[in-house]
Length: 166
Image 1 (spheres, rainbow, N blue to C red):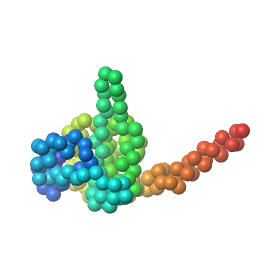
Image 2 (spheres, rainbow, N blue to C red; image 1 turned 30 degrees about the vertical axis):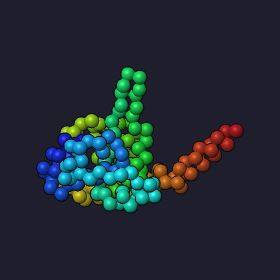
Image 3 (cartoon, rainbow, N blue to C red; image 1 turned 90 degrees about the horizontal axis):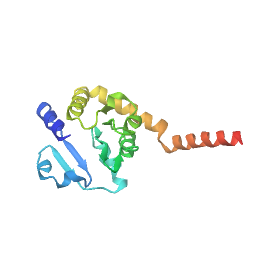
Image 4 (cartoon, rainbow, N blue to C red; image 1 turned 60 degrees about the vertical axis):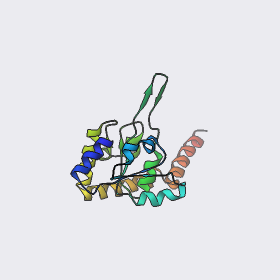
């Protein structure tokens, strides 16, 4: 992702990356010295909406972990739902369930590919109307599928179908 962002910064001078949390990048001195990167400490959950609302775009560049005795891919990407619920356009890799959560190909890029991330970012950032429209569609998607009301409706429908069979 670093390579993609460096290329993007060379093309668009007003790009800035904010990383929230204590991942491995927090210990990478080369990464934290870049003037276009801000590494932020973890925040309590109640502060996440205000952080999300300060963003123009949220990126989840998750990639599969494949080791001899362990295979893992993003299960749901709850953080995508948080960004999308705040009206922030969200893009993510094609790892695990991310495409299902994002819900549109415009918001998906090939995992582990700096070229794919770069191309996706250029496409979206050079078309602010498309980015805004994607954010609106994604917020509506969250309200329809992942809000408390939507989940309750889905469970109620499921439970009614079981009771009807009994």
